[in-house]
Length: 163
Image 1 (tube, helix red, strand yellow):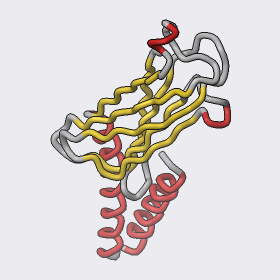
Image 2: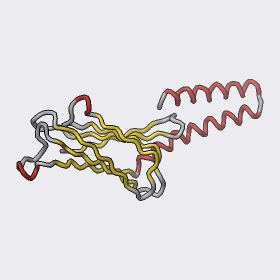
Image 3: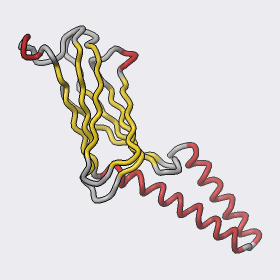
Image 4: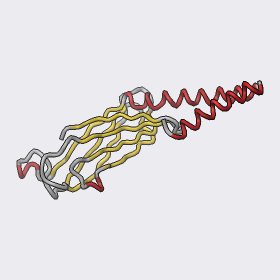
């Protein structure tokens, strides 16, 4: 729940008490609209993340030459993220945050935004980083964020990808 969601719920409670004290019909109607928006804000983000599938590919240029099983220091590494909607409805307002383990600390988080993803559609993102240090890297974590159109509620889903 975001700060706007908390303020929205508090205003719904306030409007309800105002309506119960004044017994004015249009204030009850206004309160019912507030609570129906809260219920929709709870359902939309949850449904948005349900049918999304994320794939991650690490493309190394020198992998065939060196015979190593991972990226090396100072090597250009291209990462491809593919998001697929397997659902019957379009998904909206999806934010993707990847914590790239072999990127320098200041470029470790890569953020992408999908305003609308049609049913049975796929979108791909590419970015390039340079290997920061030698050694084995921990697995990459991709976090999907979905929110409702008003920004009242938010749902997160984390996926861990081995390297």
